[in-house]
Image 1 (spheres, rainbow, N blue to C red):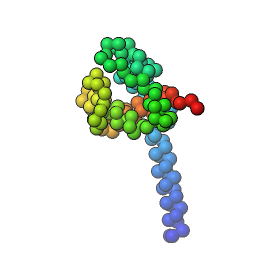
Image 2: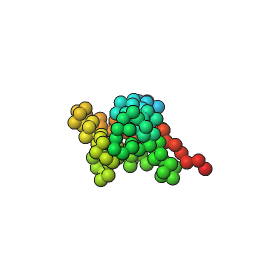
Image 3: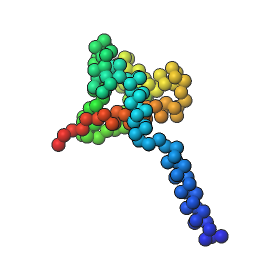
Image 4: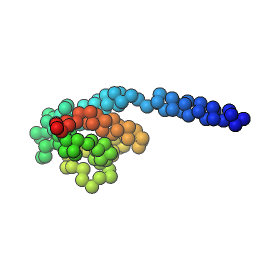
Length: 138
């Protein structure tokens, strides 16, 4: 019996790991999802390339942020957790002007998403933002 236990444990771990990989979308799919969400919810102000030059930017009191500069301004490091908090907006003190939606609330109340659905959307947006970062040249 004790000889079978390590083998059974190994098989269980292998099956669990395989199942988890099958459920997790590939990185490229998450970035694509984030790109689509960005085009829908963010590009009108931030521009399709995220540089703060969207068609609505001129009408705002304050120019939207250039979202391609987060890593460059942070020593080449993209702080995904910080950006996630800013995009969600519900747990940060400074979220920007009132013109910037609190997306955590917007996805909850306008879209009717549960917390895990909100997290998936914001995670995808953050992964897309990470993919468009301009890195400091050395």
